[in-house]
Amino acid sequence: MKQLVAALALFLLPAPALAQGMVSAADPRAAAAGVEILRAGGSATDAAIATMLALNVVEPQSSGIGGGSFVVQYDAKSKRTTTIDGRETAPMAADPRWFYDAEGKPLSRRDAVPGGRSVGVPGTLRAMALAHRKSGKLPWARLFDPAIRLARGGFEVTPRLNNSLTQFAGHVDAGLRAIFFTAGGAPLAVGSTVRNPEQAALFERVARLGPDSFYVGAQAQKLVATVNGAARNPSKMTLGDLAAYDAKERPPLCGKYRVYTVCSMGPPSSGGVTVLMILQQLERFDMGKLGKNSPTAWHLFAESSRLAYADRDQYLGDPDYVQVPLKGLLDRRYIAGRSALIDATKTMASVEAGQPAGAPPRVRVAPSEVPGTTDLAVADAAGNVVQVTTTVEGPFGSGLSMDGVVLNNELTDFDIVPEKQGYLVANRLEPGKRPRSSMAPTIVYGPDGKVRVAVGAAGGSTIIAQVAKALIGVLDWKLSAQDAIGLGLVYAPGMTATVEKGTELEAMVPALQALGERVQVAPMGLKANAIERVRGRWVGAADPRSEGVAMDQRGAVTVIRRVGAQPNRPSE
Image (tube, rainbow, N blue to C red; front, side, top):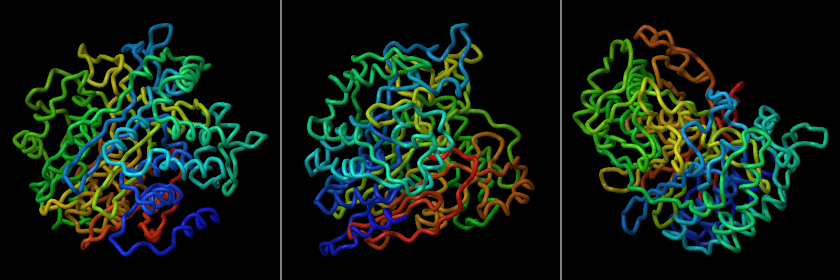
């Protein structure tokens, strides 16, 4: 598309003769925004914030300041990894039966999503502000410039955005329809120019006045009025809910995989711990020798996945509200016991959660997330690295908007029914609580302590499998990050293994079935981004299923072989 080519061409300019920074994002215009900030002297954190804001403009179905984020940062000077929890919270008026109807029956997830009750207090701006205070270099307002230009000056509709608008035309509110649909009610065609002046004005206010202007005052009043006045599922959010929200610095979740140190986001995200469990349960197998073309390797991956997902579904939740047996789940003896259940020659008959040390009595509830979200990775010339996964949950979130910004439906990531078989579930909804997430922004360090690869993904609960697969691809199969992301996926959160349609793995279905795998073939809404260190320089990667790119500080774009669109899946 002409605008995308022009956006890239703007950055094909000479750059200082120094080590180059790198940005990987799901849209070229967002990557270009991050590069602009790097070239202006910004840090990796500054560039990540600018990229997130630009994604809010050009990929509104996936993320934005109306949603939440998890941030993993590596500081090259202190050699320290930090993580920031910008996950949304439930209003204080919420209770475990928040999503029950007037007759006292639980709503289906489909009926719970639209409208105000699914909207959590947004956390992304607070996460940005905390990250900027810790490691930003440029003024806060400067980071908004690229996104404001896009929103006010206009941007072109991409095939992915058009597809989302087409699929979810009945989901979005009048405010979004006024921006993204014709007067006759049709989604804007690919290549059409969109302008979002209300969003530009909102960004200008937040840039000038700071993040508090979103959480208190007139803007907060508008948000509360929007969700509480929704025609469907009105909420009971208060101004106090917004004013009280704060992003939290959480301890990074780090563990060993072979000679590497893997650091990710801990609870309330389940992503980091589940990725680590998948990897560590596979350590006793020579995955490198088996290789990416081995059905046995993918069978092992499926077996390890279903064990880890079972524990995830049963035990993970917001650690400020429920007891999470994190040490027990990652204890090497426990991991060895779970790994012993994996047989390279056959599939286990059934899978149940284990009993790690410190685990309270609970029952398993299967995940209900849908494909959505977006991811980005940034490295600067000083060696600082930031990995961010950010979301409004499902496509276009709750369907509600405010000043051109989509409001999330994150509260439907809670388990709607708060108890099962007489036990309270870990991820039940409670006042002020943060819903469990699958987001898994991850930074991996080599035995020399230097960053080896930073990777994250979008796509609901498939995020965990995508990140684990990419890490095995890079660390065991010695693939480039680009090739590892591009590999097909076997997704096995339960006994059925889904093999990604249209990939090289389809040919392995008979061999997987011969190993006892119950297999279905289906398209998946996958999208990942990564940056890796190769021979002392940054190399970027972006998912060939997406419209994303990796762009270095000079503006040079990684060449990515695109794959065909995946039909009949929600577009992220």
